[in-house]
Image 1: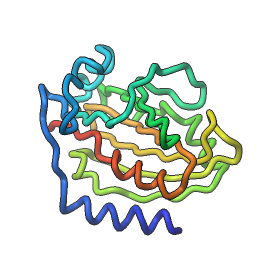
Image 2: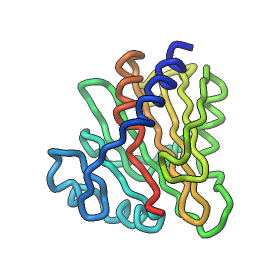
Image 3: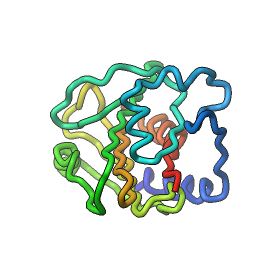
Image 4: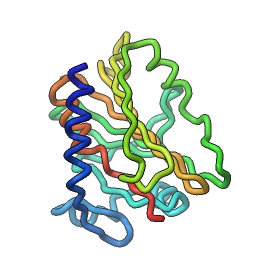
Length: 185
């Protein structure tokens, strides 16, 4: 319940403040030069197909590994805080939302789960939602997880997975990296 109150408060604050800096069609964090060169070409192509802007987290980019529970294209890690972000973009050619990451959603339902609907306009999306949960057993060394889902017809469905351990730090790190995507149109 505490996490839900934190997200609602921060969500309200974020409605009033949204600042970003644009760099070659990809939004870049202030002070992060050459961010465009660090992102793999395959991921840049997914951003282009999905008509998305992306604000790269101020973390270390790591190689994605095959994961049967959580499909993802790119990942970032903050080793000092035991926090990881995994991102999956599914470009769409139709109005339907794909059923891409159902394995992780099934696992979420087995643990504790709190969800909030987000104002989809903040992402220029048709739908947006966020859920935070605790795993029954550690998952890849993490105790807690969160999923951001944004969807826009004829563009893409985006899944951003947040993984961590420390409750207070986990919530702060999610909020620092919640608005990393926005649809261009």
